[in-house]
Length: 73
Image (cartoon, rainbow, N blue to C red):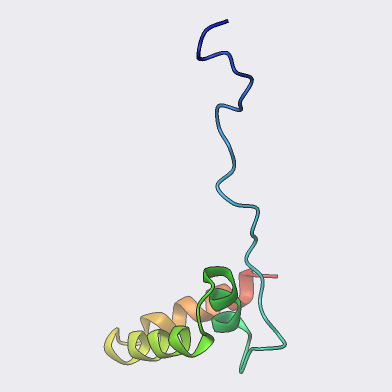
């Protein structure tokens, strides 16, 4: 038996977490709350990033928010 034959999986999943909208903690669609839960950060930080991205990115983060809202479960 070599050191490579230990029976370990060659590829392991990075995480078993799945993204989901957070309807309970969400303000509009639950997208920022869901992202905050997935990343383990405060939802206020995610909302501030989306607001800044919408204002300084000429609305691009608003489009991203709507796409996530439509595609996420």
